[in-house]
Length: 146
Image 1 (cartoon, rainbow, N blue to C red):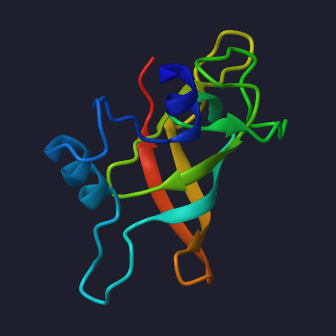
Image 2 (image 1 turned 180 degrees about the vertical axis):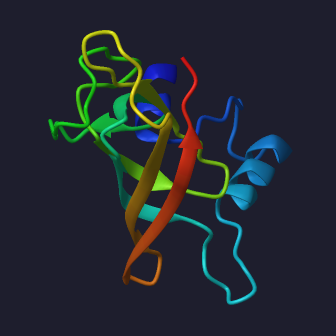
Image 3 (image 1 turned 45 degrees about the vertical axis):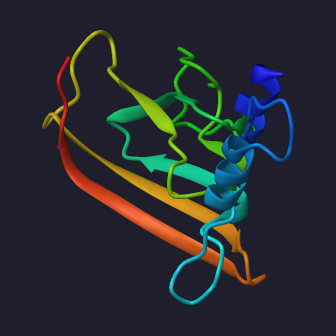
């Protein structure tokens, strides 16, 4: 059961009855709302990582599965769920964490010229009110350490 919960981003409450205080508190936290009365979660989340040629995406760890997009910025070395630069999550809330791993690409054993790279994270999700939202984060000028 734990594996299923981790892969889908689900929740598991160990309680012997639905009437227990532990279950009720966990249920209330899961469906907490913001100031507008909306639930703090997104559904059908897609995360894509784009990099400059100095970096390659090695993989991700978290409640996600691969979208199997093999692009030139995908590393041959896989860490976690690798072999892609895009992943999908069933749902996400403010406590959802996804770790992305990178590899410094080199040609013939030489470090990349300039020693700098950039990463762009693009996330798309369906908001609880039904609208599709896209967020983009750019991390320019990352120093590369071997």
